[in-house]
Image (cartoon, rainbow over the protein chains, first blue to last red):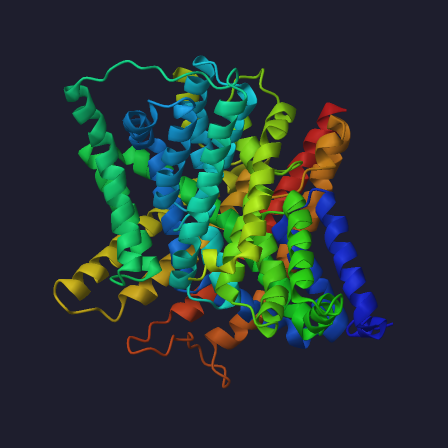
Length: 438
Length: 184
């Protein structure tokens, strides 16, 4: 029997089912996501259509790697990689002591604010969690903070990198959904801050309700000369943030160019601080190459798979399935959120964005919603995926730098209230879309 | 602060099972890595030329896209040699060490097949991008005012990278299998 084209007799219902079953089945065996999707793509391309469609798929892959907006991804990763290797974050944390030092729970609040500034400099998760885990966590534990609260603040704060602009999650969403990334960044600004303020609020409430878990502030007076020295730690990061976000919001440079400006800013900062070495640049560049390799190849696989699935008519089929569950658009949105939550527990956000958004975004548009708003909602949803067990990457990043007596289980338990806050933020965004689109 | 510093500067390397090819891939990765730095510098000079001198170039954008695309393609190859591709290790982590080695072999074989098949698929694309219908050699150009042959080159690179990836997976599978037999 001829294999080429033989799968078509399955019909789209069974075909979709077989495709998802194959995808999940291969995925849990531990085969890298990128190659699972490529394999399934090829199986269906040949089995459903035959060799004629193969060039169509490869040209999708080609256009995926050669888009100008995508250039900003390695730039933001490079920026974060240089940041990780410099002492900028440590000095920033020291400087923020001036702001957070006076109140009960000050160090935790300060950690969240540092996280926001770091998030406004880079757009990825990982480095930030590690940095805060090294700088802020030991200090909070030494001052007698409840362990779970301290862990939660570090992981949740460190994940903000992909919510506060510039964010790679939003860039990838903008690419798949064909939405202006500048608009997405503008829209994500307030929701990102809102999430950070929810965290701050939680810390303050804990300080009030469970004072044993949150130590009083250390009120040692800081001499003026010391204050000035500390403020210097604040200067360079703020300058970089202004350079990056300023050139995007001010319309001076495209997002891609702004990302390069950010790299230059951070690089220049390391030179000014006397930290620059070729080893630093080399290490950062190599790490960037590896990270983008990871991200892009998941993207390559996913975009190829979506291409074939679309040709099969699968996207139409799934769209009808989703829109068919209810006449109430809110229920459809909630259903999509549920799908994203579940996928977020197991899959990487790049894969989720590229696999689901080609299906979800057209539905959103046809329901009359703003795709920019949905992008922010998606980024917020992915915040949950960074923390949720069993694969919350933030927990794993933190585990890699904490003392062995903090177990992964304890980290995940510590994250539960913060996941609750993130879900609250998702709910607020759905109830009041004006938070994002004003 | 010694231990945390060490963690911060942790640098991955090609896994030992990737063999000589893996080490070469790891070493040559420095070129595309600095290509990214170069891309950054080009973007900066473009911003400066446009705003300070009012003279944007016609080559900056296409060159940065090309440099980054090279690093994307090479990055995948590097992740293969370093075993850093993202995977779901839910079941894998529960396996006993012996079964895990068998899984390593099977995973590498499947990935090799997958990338090998895609190298063939890329060849179908290269056939159109590198030769004219009459059979004479001509690399596809971008069609812009500058009109470099980047699309043609990139398609060839993609094919070569997929081919090398398949080879790397074959070497990995072989070495996992060899080690597996050795430990029994």
